[in-house]
Length: 154
Image (tube, rainbow, N blue to C red):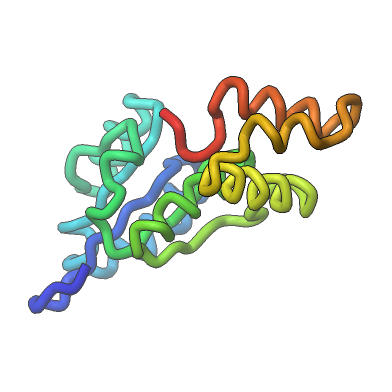
């Protein structure tokens, strides 16, 4: 998103301690960023408390509502959701700063990449049938596919 006025539209997804004690105090020094800042967290009480403490605008519970609407995002959620959220924003052209780790493990990251490719080429059924059936990661993969937790499904 290019703006002629030089302002940046930033979102912070995940409003825990790292957001409250690190990111928000740092961003507060930049009034133009704070005016456009969007906070995202599933805990509405937490959002309201940070709005009061830092003077931000109304936060939202669902990050999908901001896809394609921000220039950059800070992903500060629990690690299990880092990869999915980061990829969703990257696909929309946003700059992403993601807390570590990007994924729970290298294996998880590889599985995420395979799942994304499977979705792109619609290989869901044949892929699941082609992998070992008793492997711990395969069981997780099958469950994710069945429940459509992957691919940014809501």
